[in-house]
Image 1 (cartoon, rainbow, N blue to C red):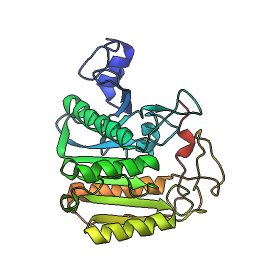
Image 2 (cartoon, one colour):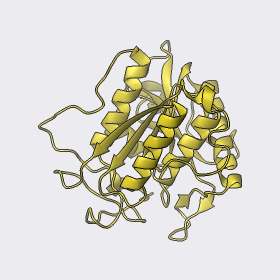
Image 3 (spheres, one colour):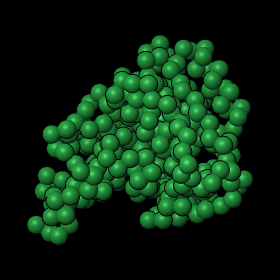
Image 4 (cartoon, rainbow, N blue to C red):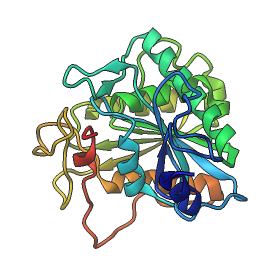
Length: 283
């Protein structure tokens, strides 16, 4: 057994890529899935506990390694998490990836999501009724599209700075979608999700009777950073941002569903919010 295998066996700690061993699988064994993904195993892993599963669709011009920063900002103990890599190569770097927006792209992303779920269910103790899906920007829109198409597969969906999907078939089964909780979070500095997008989503959700929960985060607060297309920090006015308060709201949203309790999405804190965007795309 290699040093890395022993480390994973002893700690079951931070994260495991698709080639890391679980159940003592060889590090050199070929992956079981036809795409790259990142698997996150919670700290203090308990094999007898069925964890909620969080499927994260990474930002455009990033990679599946974004999951490490996401879980660090959200929770390192509450979830098993998995992030499939987008299928389109970024124009910025061959090591970064992005999601497409046509129907074929969305269908492929949907396949990645369900294959990722199957991989996690086959490797770790997962509560099959506590599977969540989330994403940022374009990926947030895709998460909504997948969740609305197959609401019975998810306990909840999280979209951060992702407009409501305009692609056909998003609300083909809108009556069944009413039971699916969806967190729709927007930063006030967002260029991907404007105030008009939020208003439109509110109107659609109200008309269809959907369980959308809206929360808005103001830019300009301490620690509120932003991200350019390569993952570097920029001024808040230049592009979208993702900070820990958004991720903590996502954690509260999911924990409220898991525990069947009313959990406020945003709580006051003296600790300044921290940008997690600077770690994206640097792998």
